[in-house]
Length: 158
Image (cartoon, rainbow, N blue to C red; front, top):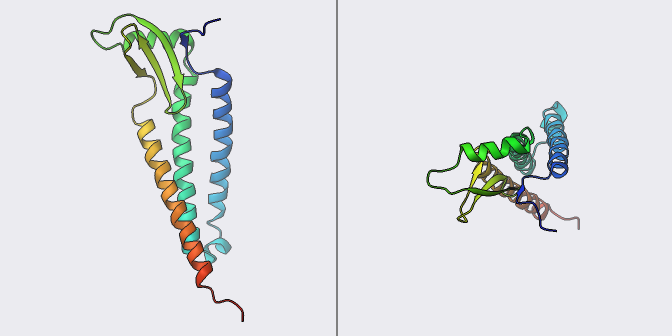
C-alpha cells in the first residue's frame, strides 16, 4: 500500500512532542526560578552561571519550537491544503503532495515539477531555534570546562 502524498505531521507524534516539550519547559522554568533563592545565589560559581545560561537558552529554544508546532496543530488537513494553494509561488504547477517534517520543523507543499515550498511555520522559527541550541551547547561546554578546571586546581589532601 502506497503512502498518502497528502500527509502532514502525524497528530499523535505532534501531540506527544507538544506535551513532552511543555513539561520539559515547565520543569526547566521551575528549576531556573529556584536558582533565584537567597541560598542558591550565595553558592553561585562561574560554572553554575554558565550552566544556568545554557538551560535558559535551551528552554527558550524549545519553547520557540513548540510555538511552531502549535501553528501546525490548529490547522486541519483541508486547511493545510488550502494554505498550500494560497501560498503557491507564481509559475508553480499543480500540487501533488504535502509532508510534515519535525527537523527542521516545517510543513512542505510539493509541486508536480519536483519543487517544494514551506508554509504555516513562521520563517524565523528554525534559524532562531538552531542559534539558541548552538548557544546552549557553547554555554554547557563552557560550564563543563570551568567545572573541570575548578576540580583540577583544588589542592589535594596529602
